[in-house]
Length: 340
Length: 277
Image (cartoon, rainbow over all chains, first blue to last red; front, side):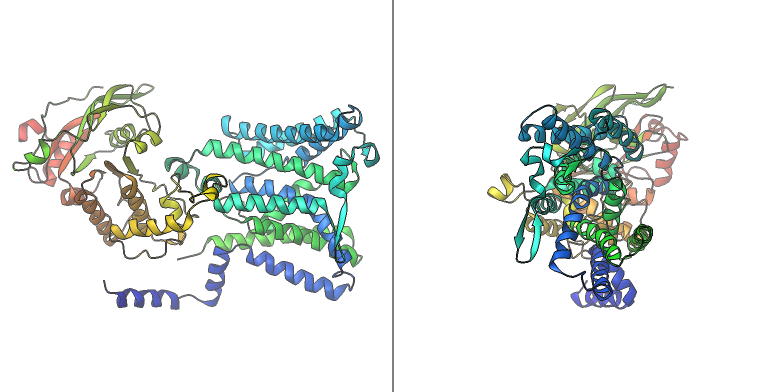
């Protein structure tokens, strides 16, 4: 076949695409484009609606509010990329947080020991989820629905349902709530940790073989296995790494809330799933980028924060989030029907 | 149920080709037996594959074609019997074992990951890392290098319709996806490439492309096992044809020694091989 003929064929193929199909193609390759667009629209809209929205002060608060959900959403992204779902994110985080706080306050352990044990416990909790998914072959939805109750109950039993205020905790546990200024921005160390988590995991997902296996297992587990990907080991590792991230989120949450409270973050599960889905990651697995999740978390918080600055009733904010999720999944379904 | 096994010494070796078949088989199986509960999957099958040939395996549904192949690729472990590769006794307990020994398989269900690009699929589970500390400490993939070599592998097979190795496999046609799977097998199979119904889901033109690729693999000196239901295709590309029936080997023929009708007759049991040859 001569080059001219194949060029003509390629030309013909290109001409067949309507503008809408071209948009679909772009979104297929870059699923985070539509959430980024939505975030920009939201920023402009809130800037017009409330002059105080786009100030350094407001932006600092917005980032601080986003930090915990953004961190949790990294673990949730990993799990959803493997076509799973994790309903135990909030429970693992709260359990880890209550253990950190109780060990250091009542147990009198140094901050670093309490922190390490708390994070380790979150890792074990994630590993436990992974074991149930990979060894007993239970659906992730069922596994994490069960462990959601189990971990929540353990956290309440262990802490006696009592909150522990920041002043009773060692400085290290509160450290991520401390802030510093860049110009007029006030940023906390928790935000810095979130950025580090995103940078590390984005590198792992996009640049290492392990990252590719996560996508492969999520897209088609049987084909991945036949290709030689150790599917079960990858799944187990995904849930375990997610646990580690929830443990770090627990540390961020103590700093953010100024206390360890057993009923903190009641909406953490849904918020983290919402951030992932709005960020363009497919609930069917194998498709999505971490940068999308970060944008998704920012969108959720921007709507919440912007609407509250406008003095809108909280229920309208919840309603808006619900609409966002449905629109995001509908767009995902459409993108997946892309043709060559 | 026991199948009438037949002794066919080097069955159907065409005259004048002894120079090839005088060699040791690259892959051979002896008396493979596998049962699933009370169902007998394989009832003492023998198979011989010689260097540089295309051996077709045909048989009716349930004759044990796929089971036989799965034993050769490590997906199943036979209850008894032995497999030798290049004269050495081998034991595969996982597909990775067979792959490490130089046997590559193209599965019926393709085993490609739609969301990943072509280069990632070709190198899946065999990724190459960057040189130096980026690769050793940070485990960073050598994406550019793999993409370049993937392009080379695809070009070697004469596939011209695939140009961009960064293209997601899901945007390819069925034939192009199959080409990716074959290219992967060709790039890494050092001894044997097994194709399980590679044209089952393809149109006429795309099937022709896959058959051309099979011939190219043979011309490169690889040994190919082709499982197929499509008799015209088998008679077009095969050097020898292994007929599987009732969990055993009913015989081995060549496209020259028997025509399609006779082949099908042996396959269905209407005819016995010893009465025809």
